[in-house]
Length: 620
Image 1: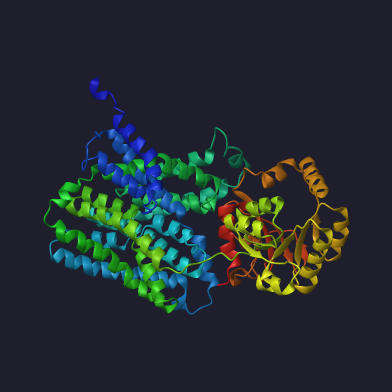
Image 2: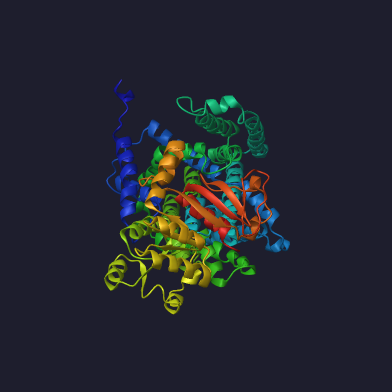
């Protein structure tokens, strides 16, 4: 009976590491390591390379294998073929300059170079198997590429899209080729390779079934609370494809990837409710177990003590960069040398797929222990160093600040308003004639000009003409009225906001087109909305809800001119509230067509709003 007792000690250690590793990684600001790299390193500390605290068991191996399967499933979930299709349609360039064509030839160049280098490594006795090492060299880590492009605000531009397409093609193609090769290698009967096609048949069958059922009301009713039918369906799909792959005698790597792709096609969007739940389950439990176990099973001493490692590790490291950087020179058709090199370095990032493929090769004895160890080290090095080099070389993209705001008068009310606007990325400049307030405002890290706001020559030196909005708050009514006149008639500023305590100022300010706000007006306005629309108003104006905001964006990206709202896919939880075109307000519907310089009002979380600003507001 004692043999049937399950010890939870090893799992406890792994889960505790998975919990604390992100905190440690977050604290290491000078070296931005991906969390999965931290998990592999943590596994090395508690495993064979370190304290050897992990006891092998059948159920722990199951969690490791299922973590690997779930990782491949989420890789499929990340792929968006609608994006590839739309980019192919949008481009009017010559065929060899289209993003999909460039990405395809980049991958073909990688495969060709990888085969040549693998052949020579085999001749020198560094590796045992040329085809599998060729495929290992050809991989790219989509999990590193996507967040790096997002962080640099490059994901939605043409440059970022080509890099993303290259990573997508590399991920999908190597996944299929690895599965085919492993089937050929392990089966004496060649016909069994064609059984892999049954995986694709299953893919289309389940996709068609999903199209019929996902839109039904009962599915939506059961998607929440205790039923969570969509999550259960996703897990059923994973296990169906695992069982099918096992029955066909192939690796689960392609089956679970295709299962993820089905969910991606049916669910439409990496920020959907289902996608967030699956991400939470995978990265919250199963996937950390896989990566920590990868590190735990890796004995670094066996690599470092092997004389071949002195040559093997540098040789593999040079190879994985060469096979990506040289083919990346095809990007010179469209981009600068610096952009081309930075793309090559980012595409050289390897992580999940290279580790998984190497683990398969080790299990089949076509990759040696020292080669597997060297590949694991290469994965850690490339996914750490490559994003750093990319960030250094790649072009800087800045979000144009449409909220260029000038405030005339330094008061408690304007400082409080400035503090709230600063959180929304507003570019704020103060103007004051008071030296003490000038110093006080400057010490709070605001831009501030000292001078007489009634002096036109002085105002011109402040660049106030380029302000989107001018906020005026002066205690003297006459000065406030004169400032409204100057801003409107002399400087030509359209959006003038007058804060006042005087009822007389309301009439005078309105005369020059200013929007006047008095304490009485503000009180009545808030009370009215809290009575009529309590939920919506609280959501928008709750001071503790910093992540939620409204934004106005001018459409400047020609890719989206003449495109209907039905075709527009906004990231995350962003919604279009209204469109203003030449002063006319349009209530958005699916058939509305966007035009150049439309003013689009959006609502959503701040991070996703920033993505939309780059997507729509930047001219290509």
